[in-house]
Image 1 (cartoon, rainbow, N blue to C red):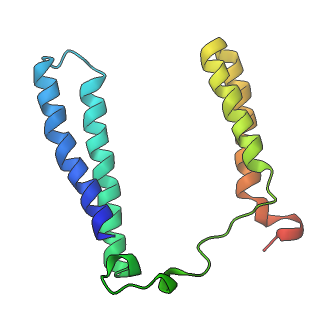
Image 2: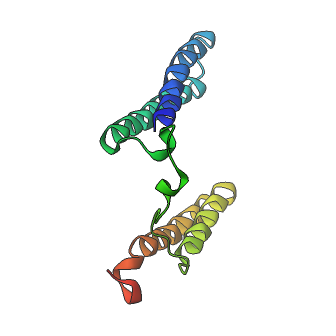
Length: 133
């Protein structure tokens, strides 16, 4: 994770002065770009700090070592549910919500309701039915 940490912390160090220079060039009158660039710097620092702390607690991965072998990274990577229909429901709710941004605000609330149902169904998918833990 050393490379990933360097990329994100380097991004934070890059975007901070860029945001300040952008603010000076626009006399701090443009209130979208200046805070957005600073927020990119802060979010990049958050991710870089998280990766740094994770790398210290986990140790070196096979891809971080020069003598790392492919078979060291084999095995189960995560838990996936290929039979799940909830991501489609969540995507439909998000699509309706984005349609609401373009057409009318009242549609946004309908999409938010469908998205909430899809998200709760997806999160609690393994808590009931045949696949309950």
